[in-house]
Length: 345
Ligand code: HEC
Ligand code: HEC
Image (cartoon, rainbow, N blue to C red):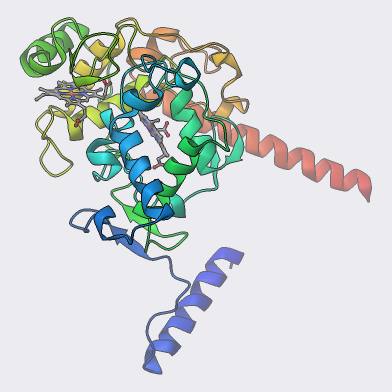
C-alpha cells in the first residue's frame, strides 16, 4: 500500500467512525463551494469605516480601472495601466461571474505555485501579473492604496470560503480543444456575424467618451494598441477559446453558451492573429521550460514543433508531447537522486 492510499483509507475509517458516533463529517475534508447561485457579498451592508471605503475603492478600480490608473488620467505618475480596459473587461460582473476568472475564493487559494514564474506567488504578485500583461502596464507598488484596495476587495469577495476549498466556478470551464489547426477564414465569418456588432469590424470597440478623457469603453477593443499584450493569458488560444465560449457574446454564460466549440476556437484564433502590444523580456517567462503552456505563442519553444502550431493548434498533440517530456525529466531526476544517494553511502 502506498503512503497516500493508506492515509486515504485511514481518513475514511476516521470519517466512518465519526459518523457512527453521530458526529458530522471529518473537518479536514476540503469543502466544496458552488459559485453559481451563491449570493454575491454586498458592499452596502458593511458598516461605515476604513474597511468599507477600501472595499468600495477596490470595486471601483475593478470596474473603472481606466479612470484611476489608466494611460489617460491627469496625474502622469498614476498612469500605471497601459491600456484603457478595466479589470472587469475580462473579470466580468466586477469579478464575480462564475467561470469568467472570478476573484471569489481567490484569497483562499493564494499563495500558490505558478508555472509562469516557477515560484510560489502571492495575490499581490498575481494582481501585478495582470497589470503588466492584461493591462499592458507597470506593476502597482506593494504599499500603494490601489494594491491594498485590490487585495481587500478580493478578500471581501472571498469571505466565508475556507482556505484550501474547492471552488466550483473558479477560473474557466476546462473545455477540450478541437484537434486541428484553427481555421482563420471561418473565424473571420463568426467574428462578423457574432462579435463585430459590439467590438467593431476593426476590433477597436466603442469608446464611452472621446480619446484622452479616461472614460474607457462601452465595448472594449480586442486588438490594436489599446489592448492586452502578447504575454497575457488571454493571448493564449486555449485560454481565449474557453473565455469566449462561455462568456461571449455578452450575455453568454457557462450554462448558456451561444457558440459551438469550433466557433469559439476559430473566432479566438482570428482575434489572436491580429496585432497587439508586445511585452518586453517574454523569453524570461517560464524559467522551468517544461511548465510552459503549449499555447504560449512566444519563443523559446522546446517541443520541436513549429511556432505556428503553438499559436493555432492542433494543441492536443503538443500537450501529449509535453506530458512525455515532463515524465522523462522526472525519471531523470529520480535516477540522479538515486545515484547521488549511492555515492554518499
Ligand atoms: C484581457 C483580460 C484580462 C484583464 C483586463 C485582466 N485580467 Fe486578470 N486574468 C485574466 C486571465 C485570462 C486570468 C487567468 C489566466 C491565467 O492564470 O493567466 C486572470 C487571472 C487573474 C487573477 C487570478 C485569478 C485566479 O482564479 O487565480 C487575478 C487576481 C487577476 N487576474 C487580477 C486582475 C486585476 C487586478 C486586473 C486589473 C488591474 C485584471 N486581472 C485584468 C485576464 C484578464
Ligand atoms: C453585445 C455586445 C457584445 C458582443 C456581441 C460580443 N462582446 Fe465581447 N465584450 C462585450 C463587453 C461589454 C465586454 C466587457 C465585459 C463585460 O462588460 O461583460 C466584452 C469583453 C470581451 C473580451 C475581453 C476584453 C477584451 O477587450 O479583450 C473578449 C476577448 C471578447 N469580448 C471577445 C468577444 C468575441 C470573440 C465575440 C464574438 C464571439 C464577442 N466578444 C461578442 C460585449 C460584446
